[in-house]
Image 1 (cartoon, rainbow, N blue to C red):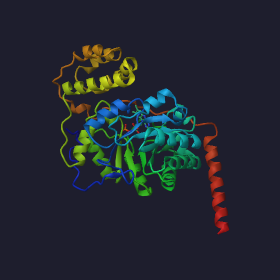
Image 2 (cartoon, protein in one colour):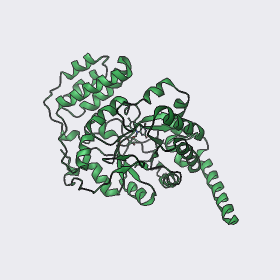
Image 3 (cartoon, rainbow, N blue to C red):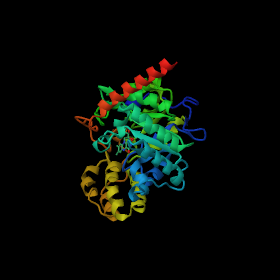
Image 4 (cartoon, rainbow, N blue to C red):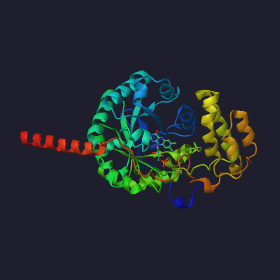
Length: 391
Ligand SMILES: Cc1cc2nc3c(=O)[nH]c(=O)nc-3n(C[C@H](O)[C@H](O)[C@H](O)COP(=O)(O)O)c2cc1C
């Protein structure tokens, strides 16, 4: 099944796209990465996605300090299934020493096989402390953070994930790409929106193409891949080396099967009928309850109920009930109102899940953050002049 925009997109030709190289020992095929998503890419969901397809599945962002302080909740989220071949995890923070310590802990204690650094998060809680997308606006500090993590990670590959920049007046992707290449990041992933834009408008894929032209390391494109064919389209349009999939897979883990199929040159299976979707939701529900316990598990489950059923006839009528469930029997009771024979509606292929539209009026940064960036730049230029003078 395809929507209009992908009607004429050919399947991948043999050899058209090489595997994505994460390190000497790790190649990712298809070149597809499940985006780290807070409250989403926990062990239950990664298990489900992995069963459907292939690629790399990144755990959600964890605060470096939560890891270094051995916070119980953070450590629980930092756990991995026995069958996770590459333990891939994202951290955030703005303190080089703390980030280095967190990386060391992840590698030595948790057996991490890939560390991604969040340099793109737009939310106030993170940027106001200098983390997420605030970091590339201070390239000198970003360099210290990245260097600390790469040094601490040793042979374990480190990557970064960014946005275009703070807002349209302050794009940071060029600086981020320079620092990433200098300091040994294996790739740079970019969500092609600014932090100010949040999830509004369309992702600006042309900037992914510009980043690809500019960067000295592999580039992963991110933003608005809803269908497997979108991934092929993004890679062909931008020349990027791989893609990162976020909201498109919310309540649609089979997207990873479709991605594996189109990259292998095969027409993808049609998405499942509602009955099969509900069977997957049931399995997901059990995994959540097993991982989080019955109380938190069911609370976590409510949003998934909305995502899995979104766009199906009759779903709107049961949505409110599903948002109030306190156990799995109640979920089954509400879902029993739905007609299991309904095929997946084409109109639901590109429905956004997980985030509302709308931008933020201002990205919250620590006091004097951008002035410090100017001062660091001036200092860097002075040092370069001194170096040049010394010959
Ligand atoms: C619910 C949710 C949680 C997210 N959490 C994170 C996160 O922990 N780390 C991160 O780098 N990005 C996070 N993101 C952003 C996604 O990784 C991705 O960059 C963004 O959704 C754009 O891709 P998409 O258009 O495919 O959704 C989150 C997005 C959503 C919808």
